[in-house]
Length: 208
Image (cartoon, rainbow, N blue to C red; front, side, top):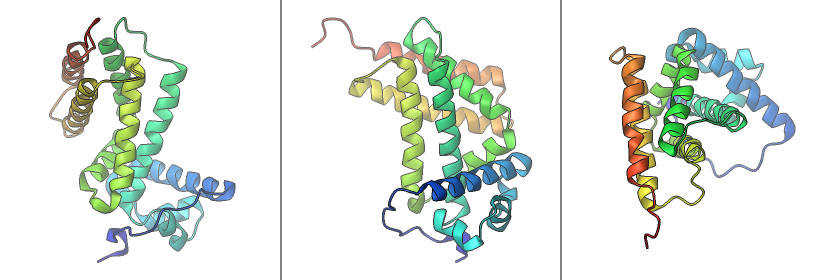
């Protein structure tokens, strides 16, 4: 088994110091830059370490594999999107419109860096159980972005189910677009269609 495929059996880590956080930030930036230039295959751990100015062993202490690194890169990109969306929230008239607008804005952000988007999506696809915490964080961030757009502070189980279906559709649409099997126009139609589930699961006035 190669170093890049080692399972992550580390215990929960303590909070990072300011210096460690800065080092982690350099690593994530280097990963994103390499992926943006050459896609999944361009992200090699040795090259990432060199670009970030850290030792290879140090890089593996932060991210045990290339998959861990790229999933963390997607998490970082989503956090940035979330911050941007909170500063400039969607202006749709109802929750379904706002979620569709939000997801299309996120999609267009990924569209600007298709190689990076492809690398991150491939990492999510290849992720095994050792990457479950990072994948779960990506899912939670996506859920938070959708719920913010909905304005749902206390979502019902039905609404959360709708959100999961929307997440799956968005992820699938991204994959089909990256593989050249769907146009941007088709992605937009699919996103707008699935977002109608929000209206169907909205709590009705007077419901028990």
